[in-house]
Length: 622
Image (cartoon, rainbow, N blue to C red; front, side, top):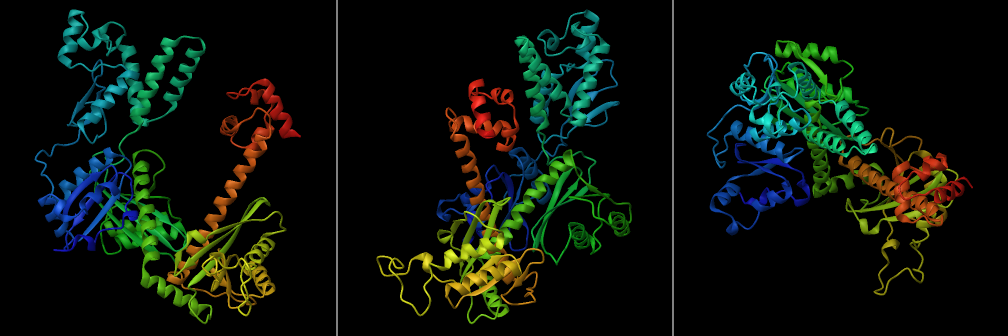
């Protein structure tokens, strides 16, 4: 038995999304499958002190050697995926499900004289149109309940329908107004058939055109003060909107696909494979890919197909990918040879497969984030990265303190720069700094100005710290700490500008380099050729991470300044407070559109009258 804490994931690594988790033993056998609306909160319960756990739970967590999870979109999807995997893996610590019924469907009996909607677990009704399957029977009843508000079609059984038609007395559903079938006498068989066709069309296409039409009718009725009709259309729109929120985990019974999702950056890609058989997710597989230089998404998909099926694993007839590769036909031919049958590559754009692809992509994003976080927090990997950087840049010692600078602006305005600090390969967010640059000719000039200001705080090695350079304890202030390595975001021009600032400052003992994003090469001062680090090296990964952090920090600062400037410009107008400024920006989307808007359009905004609209228009045009 293993110590539970030996495989316990860090709290920050576990997502707070809904999902399904699995505990495995040392042989890989699934011991327990569970679902959670919040994975982080749920898994924390298993790693409480052992003496506080139930005996069965304590035995499970001490037998397990690993825990893994799969993120889904909703709690209903988590429920469905849990049910599928409990039946798939038969975990010994789960409650056994004795009832293994098929999934329920919503069926419309189009072959009947007056078609009806019903719930069924069989698919053999002649001439019926099926929708689903649904994860639980209450889900299909809920769908019928919602749909009947928009399409009140027949729901009574055939015996009640025949009795009502013969007697001329409506069935119970018709008497209470829940069915507009012919037996109620309110519609003809032809009119009822038209309502049924609308019902089937909406359920089959999930098209929002009908919702848009009903919304327009609701607004028209409200304008003419026909509030009863407006309320009815409102309820219909709400019902149809609720129906559109359909589970992405359960597909049709005849769907057999392999679905691949990818999330990637410059160095690595996370791949998530959802194996769907009989409309259910039977397995999930994920792996990381170290990307080569200039590897396109098309090349990446080729590589993934070779990895997944190169060992002779037979592919299904349909494979869903994020986008079709350039050599899709050749790849389909190769896959057909492996599987001994025709295979089709599909890029899902809409519908249930696109919804499932979105769920898989969410898992891929989390896997990539987890990979990068664990790689950055690995002490051995960080130490190796610092040693490789020292060797590649010919430094006398490892760069234990690195500072990276990036410049951000909006068409030459609101120019800002960022400084981020990494010590021992980890970020020191408390030492990040922002710089505002009043004016600049270009990015190189901005880099020069920023580093000139930053280096002014450093004292040359042979000088005495000036007044104000030390705090009350006699220690040098944080901003006075001298880095071993300065990194700028850019190539030769940016490095040259930074070198000029470093030279003029008189500060020595600092190595300088720049990282050019196009080919991820490292540039040194006065060098005609860049330093090329291996694409999958920890050294390049660390430099890229500090560069990306500097870029993120600069962008956040630049956007906050831009928002503050916009608010301050509008705040100068008398009578225009923060609440009205927010409403104006939400209505027009930007100050540029607000400037172009006529006075009449501004006056139509909630809370803005003709007088204030004229003042806004005049101020922005001045």
